[in-house]
Length: 261
Length: 250
Ligand SMILES: Nc1ncnc2c1ncn2[C@@H]1O[C@H](COP(=O)(O)OP(=O)(O)OP(=O)(O)O)[C@@H](O)[C@H]1O
Ligand SMILES: [Mg+2]
Image 1: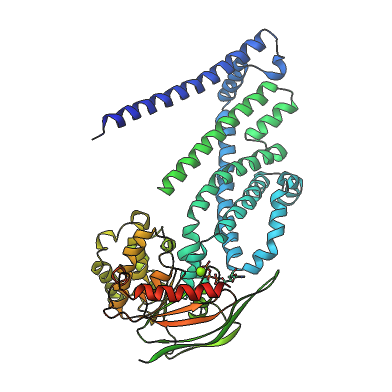
Image 2: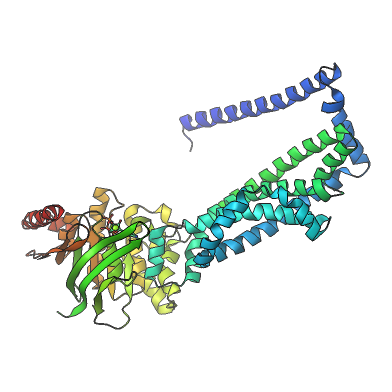
């Protein structure tokens, strides 16, 4: 049975949450109305900054042309693929880096170096090697998220509790057993929490890739819009991208919660 | 009493990039079968280093550790948090057996019976975080006893517990060890827990450490640690060892 204080607390808590949500919705509504009005009365240049009504029209037109979901799907698909490939590759590299300490010591500065390099700079090279197609986009996105995830996961592996490592040594565990029974399970949280980073890095990679080569996807939509000076299309693309990245983020967050409970 | 191991002129220097650190200078002593030996010394004097060397987890720079058994199985018990949170209590206890490829019906029953014997049966499917600090320490000891070691090593087993829990747990741990009949070496900076549990207390000097003194602890009616603490000779030993450590610091 809940005590009265507890009931009161929960009531207040829920009320607070509702108010916060309301304010958030309000901000969005006010933002769009202001934007609409500003462009309607020509206070901002509606050719450059578009307007909500134009955006809706543009998106509706994409929908009528059967293009809307195609572009959205391509971007999501590429992101999820590169996220999954990236995760597997970074796990494998992290395990190797843990098992072969010498390899880790040698690779460490290179990883740091690659980690701080803006990977987009490698885009043109990737296109030359992998071709101007979806492969390049995936390679780029995988590259971006593998490096970040590997650094995070490897760090997690190397931060395994010294006392527990000593315990494993006292059992005369070999390094594969140490990895299996201690290092990987105790880094589980770190691995899961690298998902968020991984998915947003993949999305960055996918969009930069689409900027460079693609014929489909939201990145393509934005670049194409710029080339033909259709800024309604550009802004629609950006807004769709914001929605997509939020949904992907929430999805991963949900997955994290599921996996950690 | 037969000797189970001899520590002969052990020394240890750590080589680091910033220079050589001499942790242990020269340490020798014998351990008898079934004996409970406590090694006390001030913080940083090389207790953990010494225990690691004796148990074979770390290589000494000089000297020798001689066992009178071939391939001794060692059991290590560390601080409270050394239980694996991703494993249930049951699986924590079976971990050593699994790693050493010794998990069979018999060994499994032996381990699970220990849990039963020490009133932890109802927790076998729980995670360590659901247990109190004292219970966790009992589980940790059972995990160590499960592999049936020839000798037990305890490194500051109570240091993570608050002082009243630590008193109660040392009674439990003491009883469990006595019932197992295992030879035990415990290192601690806590003189009182050393005197109240051990048959012999080895006092180390500060780092680089040497053996400062060795005291046989002879209570007339030796009992569990909390009762030994009230023994009239307890204070006598306490003063003696306190003085050794005090000298050692100079
Ligand atoms: N891996 C290492 N590399 C270099 N120096 C070390 C290493 N381990 C321990 N030392 C040094 O050796 C000395 C003894 O350390 P040790 O941990 O054995 O002492 P201790 O008595 O167990 O200390 P505490 O009371 O803190 O547990 C210390 O000066 C410590 O800094
Ligand atoms: Mg220590």
